[in-house]
Figure 1 (tube, helix red, strand yellow):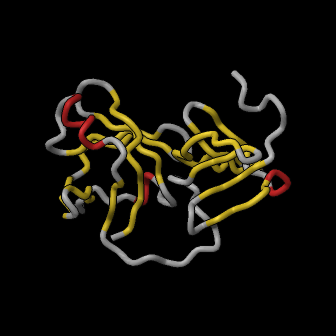
Figure 2 (cartoon, rainbow, N blue to C red):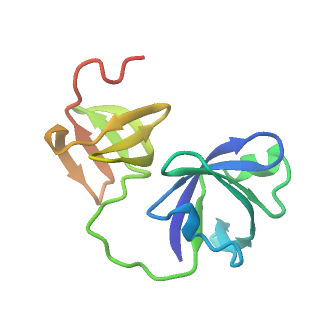
Figure 3 (cartoon, rainbow, N blue to C red):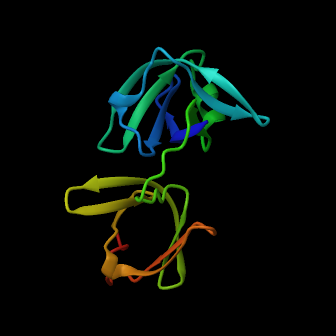
Length: 156
């Protein structure tokens, strides 16, 4: 099983969910085959009813049998998986990692936005540029990324 998305939050009252895509594009998701969400360590199949793109790395999904806000809220924080094998890639997916700014925790990275020439990370409602000059340390085992961000970048 391969993770293709992380469920970020419910969207509306009709069972919609906002997801952050992980290395998959909306067009690559085959709605004829089920996606899986793990409950009690068992993958449960769901069929995609509809997909609406929200930027380059996010989408709103409607899944069969997820018909209201309560059903959608039960899914928040879970991964969406598909059957398949991992194909090694040189590009890291930082979704789910913890972001630090000069050693101070900023929050969990909930998605990536591949803006041409400048990969950005979603942390809460903020979009943080990921540039090699900002990287202090990167620990894939601990899933921690420490950056030296410009002063005022996180202010809002």
